[in-house]
Length: 245
Image (cartoon, rainbow, N blue to C red):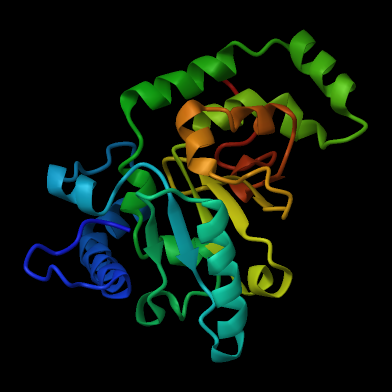
């Protein structure tokens, strides 16, 4: 949940999340300029900012703060704590003053673009481009034929490329999640584009996802064609086919 304030040892988790959210809002001024400029050279946070606000895993975003949904929120959050979708180092944004007016996760991301823009690196860009180069038409066609009966062609065809584009992920508690009990799981690239997303099924598969994230086990989901493509990765999108490298 972030590091307690040394000046306030009795700070509650709720107050801590509110403080972190406001810090992120302040940090976002320069980051939003970067996000809008779509540059490949993100600003470098200080070590304190990385430790306090930008841990590499475990992000939970609460978008729906309606009073009539409070009981559903309490139940969903209780379930999260039991199964630990995001681990002990998670960052939780549930401040209605900051996120309550945001209609969706794309709008919410504009409040803290550093979450994704600071995760990119030269190594990440190199891996993404090398992965795309290694694709052969023959391999892509075989994979597509093997899985065509159960998944969308483009999801399988470029699954490894999509996985190589990911820099971070988040579980999103939106109104649909509160109504159906299924969190939205979103994966972003280094420009803040949604690469893929899906609703978490209540079958325990994604319990303690942060462990799978660190180990890279989640990439199997991409290879198997799970999820929905974000707009940027559709044909003609800024990160979609046709490719020319």
